Length: 225
Length: 115
Image (cartoon, rainbow over all chains, first blue to last red; front, side):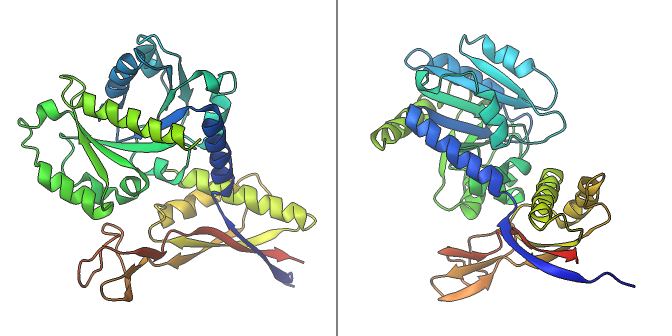
């Protein structure tokens, strides 16, 4: 005899828990006055190198800190700690992305009000992080000139959930015959009107504009409080 | 591969609902999945099986209802289907979409439970 079944309506977003927690975090960041930037990219785009430079330069004027996600090693945190600012590694194990709950527990013993900027470096991955809101104010997606101009077309979701696209390793642009207008076009087609910045963390090209962009966005954020 | 995390969330949500219903056994989970949600259907199916192991949902089925990506084109004044790679352009005239009508869904719709 077959058991009788009935239908129970649920109608809930599967990521609701993460979204609610992210909203709570965003509120906390706002209250504390800390401007939170998250960074996403594929592995090897230069997130850590850029973050290292960013921390080193911003710390001259601001109180900055960083959380870095990595699958298995603490290498990035060790590297970043050299800049002399508070850095904490979130080791995700086999998980390919950060979730709001990991940010919450990593921040447990940090005083948010003592910070001006907090950077979150996501795990190197262009797919999974796009589904998870971390409560950040600004999400930047990085692509390097060595990756090919059509990267945004291959990973539209991550570009679409980010606020700014940053093209890195511009010092290699000539050697790799990087086509800037083709890259712009592919970014534009998945995220019309997206702000695009180009830089080289190695030579320092474009870093001024990159940092002043954060500063001006933070000013707007401060005024909204 | 964030499909496994998503599958675990689905199982957790279903178990919570089963508790609310007095510990009923769930046989089938119905999900709506949008084409623009960034989730791979096949990967989600196999992750679901894994996520169910050693839970009260072991042996249950996941039924996925595909939701196509649809945008609204303000120039043609009409809804148009979109492919995943070019979300925001009208397939006919190339104009920017003013709205995503559907395709971002990742929703636990209902559960079939045994009486």
